[in-house]
Length: 393
Image (cartoon, rainbow, N blue to C red):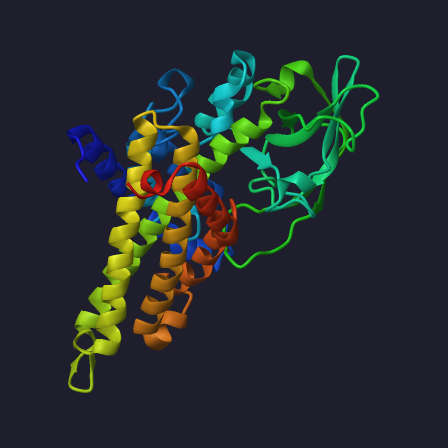
């Protein structure tokens, strides 16, 4: 994979930031159950702003970096080398704000990229996860705007967000969900709006700084100005969001495999058992070799998707290949974490070792933003609709 001087500079800057401001705080976050002290969070945000690694794909005039997709992936790869989501403290915002009005961007996007607030994205429901057609959240048109009602699950950052991007079906007066056209629409809902409440904030396997609560929207009023894009644009905007999120998961999994292999190989090369190094035993070296092959193949696949996105390729082809990258890299990273944890033996079961934390944390990458099973369906359909040659070259 050929990288320009600018690409390499972006990657090296991100690696230095992660080594200085992210990895050193992992254990503190783990032992604290996720969150870091406010003064540490402020230091990380300040360092991220000074390093110029916030809001990578957003435009510079909005507070981002105007990176290419390849450059963004190089940074996400470095974030993937860390555990406990310490990198979540780096200011950022979801890509759907690019379709928002200048007024919404001024109100929500710019402050988010300055680290002054956070957004959340609410799409999943109790009976509408992998199958979004089961969504029941609706936005009914009323005088002066819309009234949103429904319940959303697994709303990442929902416990700290100032604004929630809510996916709902837009209904005109007199229409019902059963007979109306499916006009999926995104709304910017201030988190302190009347009618927004937290139903549950369940604990999860990982120890991350922020939660994934269940939020209820009970006749929440918003205006026409709070629509992101246009009424009915939600499905297309969400498809672009999924493409970006899945590609990000893929490259972060590659970064995780890189660190797992670095630490696992160093341990195996220095640990003596039975009169020989662990690395000299095939039962240890072969799994590491298999994981290295996985990491190398996954990296090439993920960055090929990024290159396609930058070249202006068919978005539907990019979407299919992003699903393929997420599928392969998330499954490979889980295999790698399991193997490296085994290499460390009893130490691999200690939370103070990165291998144990990766083993827990990487599991969700096979689930969120579309399970591995959903990715397989998307890839299979892409083989039929885009063609085998297009998906493999």
